[in-house]
Image (tube, rainbow, N blue to C red; front, side, top):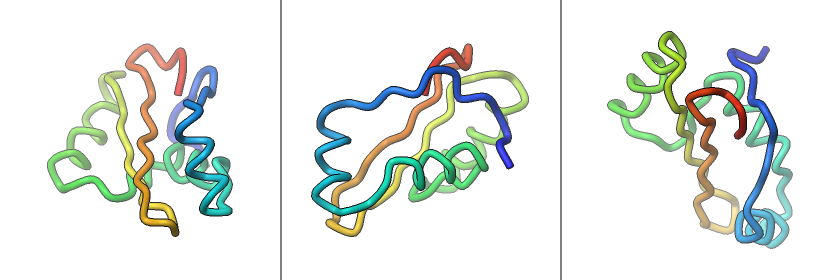
Length: 82
């Protein structure tokens, strides 16, 4: 269940390359982000994301891939893109 609209979904070449190396799917991490699973962020960032959902502020998730690389998933405050 999506907790917000992601807008246009885009990815950097570096993130796509890291996902390819790890053999993982961007879709899996996007699904986690949209459901409110913020991944490897600290408690303060988790609280900020929950507040951001109420006030339409920027949302930030971090996920560590199987390869050990961290990717960041960011949704803009206006929900125009993720």
